[in-house]
Length: 315
View: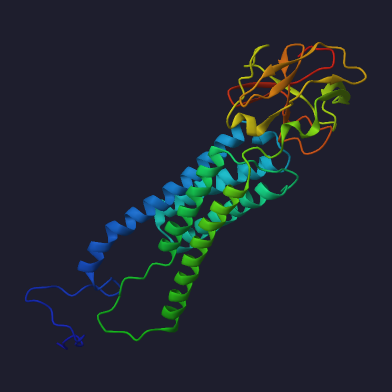
């Protein structure tokens, strides 16, 4: 019987040689497998988290925004799908795709903070900040999975291959990308006000316009005005993040042609006064990109339902 070729590695008495094609360093693999499983769980969890944030935003109002709405739905589906593939398979290509997803989503958020994207300008909110942080950490975790070293599959020592040098370069590039993303997020959030525009910039002159066959109240720029189901005639219930999406019309209101309801004001935080119409505090919606839009009508967002203000004073 011919003896098997010598591999150059002595085995302990009674030990069995690893089958062909199996990782040789079984002990080392046993030590690192739990670590990589944990990393897969972290990477998948971060993808689930960013998907959950986008799903919440989609269900609570973003679905009404043209283009942005279906893009948010696509992001949700992509995030959950990639998370499942990363968790179950640990494939490098899936992890790389997940890292790319986080980068592109973060880039879209940062761009929309500065300038309208698909006709919609984002505002700085707690949900957006959390999503941005999750995406930066997600890039780091998923890139680590995608660029991990393969376990050795042969007992014979091998020479460094050109791919090893390329892998090192990709790791450096990934590290630079993570640092750049973190710095860009921090700088953008620091330079961006919580509210996208000064609510008083348009003044408090109230006018009317026909939108969707109805005569509705607008501000001086022609943007639809809304009232909130949780407000009272003496108090606005829309504060914090709510006020970033629904911009209060401030200042003493004046009536334009066709505005026949009762005008007034209610106090807001910071000492400003918010204009009211027939006892309803007035708002514009950040999702309305241009005069004539009424994307905020009859949607449930920030704890209550929003309605356009009819010029007749009805809901």
